[in-house]
Image (cartoon, rainbow over all chains, first blue to last red; front, side, top):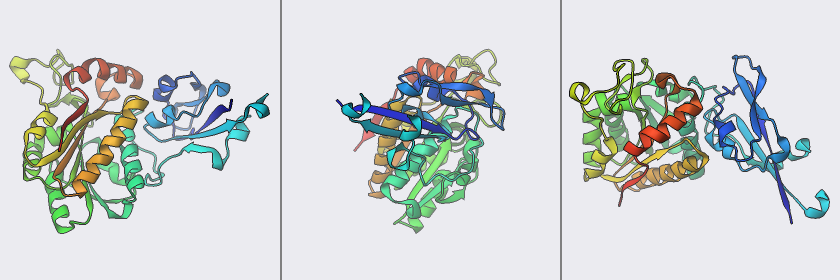
Length: 80
Length: 252
């Protein structure tokens, strides 16, 4: 069976750390960083990158459109 | 592994090209940003970027013209539907959108919106309802819920002093000029998908000359409500949505 893997890239300088993506992620991938960006906000990052499926839930709810989502299908043979 | 996934050919979701690169001035988690985003996506999907004229309101969304790369006109407080009427009548082949908040549309602009909807102007009205005047510091608006604490009702809105909350969409649905009246929200991924579908339909129906499309968004104002963005979404689900239920009120 093909496996789906995803990843997100956050524009950390524009992220306001509102946490809406954190609670919207069905797999608990996202968390807020301990560091802050230039505006003083703790930005979102992939805390559990292996759990991401590229479902775009985080990007849909992001008010500042700072999340870009990537998604790939990996054939079973290649991933084993 | 992550580096192998992050390649241009694997993009599943990226920021709409209709949105500019200007960072939005809104507070963290503000519903305005999410509504701007789905509006940009609808404009991009329909391929109408050079055929759309928007009217910005007075309120937090006054700077909306900096964020969406379409033509904009700024209206006086509450007068967006009147300005939209003139623009649409002079340019019948353009898509005309009026974007307003509840202080703008439901208080000072009540006359304009009721008559624009009653005349059935072929415009799309986007109405952001967060139950308060967000920009000026969270004062009571006509849409404030009974018992809801605001800067001007610190003990909560009382019916005997402040009157009842105003259900704008229900009134617009009764007017013969409206063809599509719907209430949406953008607090969860599912709601965002639903809202985008509704917004697209609204823009298409107004352009087809069926009458006014009216799209209400039940929204949050975390700063005005004095809650964190995620708490504000929860508060909205528990308190706003029972009084302002989501869904289509009129579709003909």
